[in-house]
Image 1 (tube, helix red, strand yellow):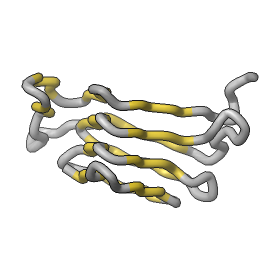
Image 2 (image 1 turned 120 degrees about the vertical axis):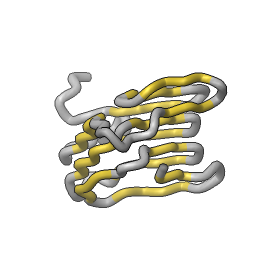
Image 3 (image 1 turned 180 degrees about the vertical axis):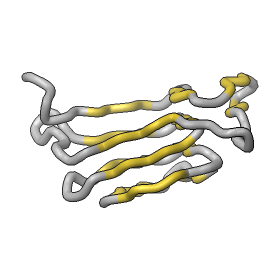
Length: 104
């Protein structure tokens, strides 16, 4: 999988594509609000931090994560748990998503 390692901070500014082997966030992954992001992947596993927007500055650009496995996708097997495919799992991590459409 594409892995954001523990201790690393990655900020994505615009991306459209497939992460065929999954996305594993052990460090910090955030999304800039200056370009659209459209990711297709068989799974997302977060044991770090995944964030878009803040309470004071909601994320306004498109942020789309589509869970899509195919015949070659490997299931997510982490921390002794078989999650399968097409899963968005958080295990000891934090997900914070605040979009502009969210009311105060």
